[in-house]
Length: 150
Image 1 (tube, rainbow, N blue to C red):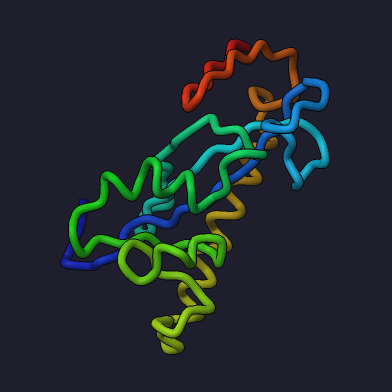
Image 2: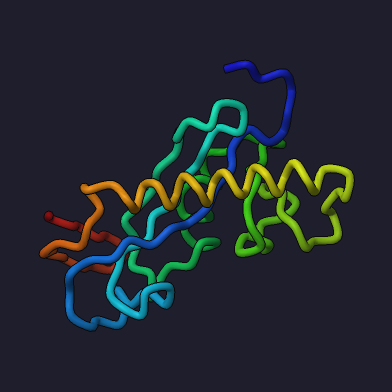
């Protein structure tokens, strides 16, 4: 939609959601100091619409970069990249545009900061919604599969 040859059309970030569950190391979220689940959320840079969602992942096992490599990185076409925060530096510059790497363009730093700020705002608004309040959760864990029943 509206692609005019830009290499970066999506901003991506991982976000944790609390779950009502006792301590289990794979589900321990350092962000909450409690159990949680991690998701990857992608926004269209042009419209702000959520157009990518991946998860749930166990936060004690999966960091943002591992989730990206397991999901969205496999879907990107050659030359296509995503705008991210510093947690994704390991995939720069092939799949990622992020601050703090030698390939970062200082001329675009301000607009990239605004894109990442919008991403954080959307992540926070998702968490405020009634659907995401902590609740009793049944979790079945296998090697790579995670099934969550609410």
